[in-house]
Length: 394
Image (cartoon, rainbow, N blue to C red; front, side, top):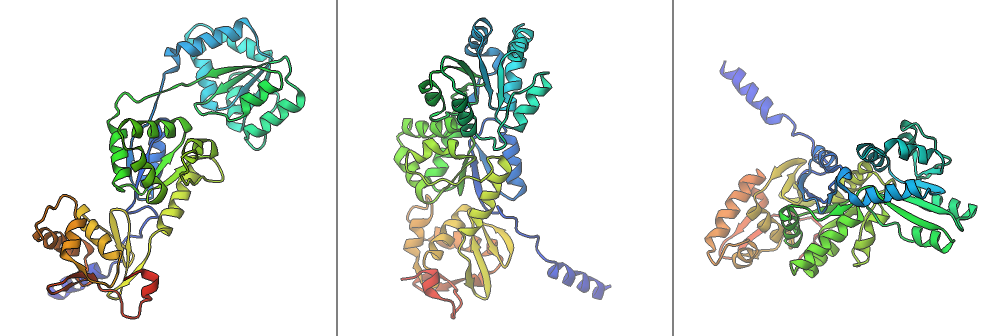
């Protein structure tokens, strides 16, 4: 019986640790209002902790008096061309019109115009409404839609453009320069969030470098976040963090415009969808981690966790502060006084360093990774044959 227990214990000890997922240990901010749950689920499935802070809210279509006024105008003064840009927006417009008792009149009007669909999803929404599009670009590109309209000629024509919450730089201007009358159809309108608390918490986390990345799925959300940072007097602090430590990932180039106007580096997927956006994060965040050969182990330091020999080890915030301070000069002694300054809210009691260090060693599961140097401080036990130039140092 005792031998069986020993054998069972050995099996437990040798059982391999679960594979580390691409975003394990990282924290990602999500500013989206629409499809935020879907994006959050995609990130969490890959291991990320998600801080959700919708930077905007969408005005419900049936309550939108501006959309109602534009719809009545188009019914009274028919457009020659209607450009549908998003499936959800087109469906929402038709459903809102039905709620106002104008659904049949709107469909009749759309049946008699040149109806262009930006892509296959919009094309499907148009056909589901019993209508037919005249043309749709294979690229899903608004630039291709613009090229076609200008090639056909728009002088003296009335063009209704279904807006989708993001600016279309140059699109409206080019049509008007070509002689068109352009009517914007605001199928969903952005407003500040009713509860600004989550946005403020996200801004605080960015400024404190407690986030590894922030995602944006609309240009208005990006502009709104920066505007709120300005209102709180922390705009430059937030911009500094986003320029250096916090990765900025946008769903597409239009979304990135307000951020790039502030000289912020941004990344976008080749396909402007949530899945590819998450893939960019899965590729970029782990690639920023610098593996360290420490005490015969392989140590990776991620946002709120460490990976030791391929096993994820969650670390308390105080421990992460110490670990990062040690990792800035791996193999070199870091004094208790310097480590104390790295601890958030520790005051002047060096005993706080010893307490946090003991908890850090337990969290890492390998106490030998950090060596105590008597009367001097602590250091990461960098392997003696490691390339110190590669890993930093004094």
